[in-house]
Length: 393
Ligand SMILES: *Cc1c(COP(=O)(O)O)cnc(C)c1O
View: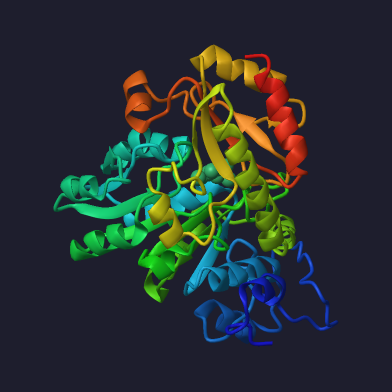
């Protein structure tokens, strides 16, 4: 059926499906590396693009198409490329848009490796970058140079939950012919649609909310226009950043329950944030659903809900934070996020440990900051777990 005009929940279930000869309700796993042609002429037509046809799985596969077509519809983009990991998606964007002599602006507390490769690897290819606090929009404008080609945002950002105004940032960037990419991993298209807000490219670590079951590593890049999509597609196919069909099938299956998973996790998160904020051993809580969030109004404007990610500071700094992590029983002490299980981690010693003390301070990552990815368990059990762990502080 034509899924263009159906609702978001209906798209989660019905979009993307590739019809097959047997009428499969679910697009099967085409676990094949290559596809045979009917004749030499047919092969030639597939290669020239005259005829749509599958050639080789790195270049295209029905199971992967099912996922990519669905993602493009959910984010309101022209097209999507699925990648083997979120970092492959980040590299797809960097490689497609940046070359020797180009400059990129990004947010100072983006996902650790997204910053690390830009500062350690890309200078080898002559790419320059500036990291600023993009939640204050004037910092972006100040960082623009004549050779700036890309504004790379992540909002809410990892792990400070700082929010950048996507519409305002896109307006400034476009005035200077700069493309805007938003890492939408923390929200998923259910909560935030960056392309509708003015961005040109959206990327995901589908390892997180999109797959949602902590059993897959995967990524995706969704582009607003045909031209940008073609650039992303070229890099993905020729750098070999493609997915495996089985990985694509599992991700597509996880995606079907995105909305009901997020509804439950978000409802839990609201209760947990309120509990933590009222707790005497907690210094502060950053959650877009709390009025105390410095960008509460912006969150209401650009996100349809506050999501399931929060960070908080336990009074007593590093040692106190560690005590909480060592004494939780239900929540798993683990990196990653967006799964059905509640995860807790400590950015200063884990995900952001590669940053220097100054970089951590600048990015707002204090030693006692704890990040919580709320799952879909019973809220009372997660709260009881945190209450018990906090009793050791
Ligand atoms: C996890 C993550 C990534 C990287 O994705 P992988 O799937 O681990 O490669 C990128 N951005 C954000 C915000 C993430 O949370």
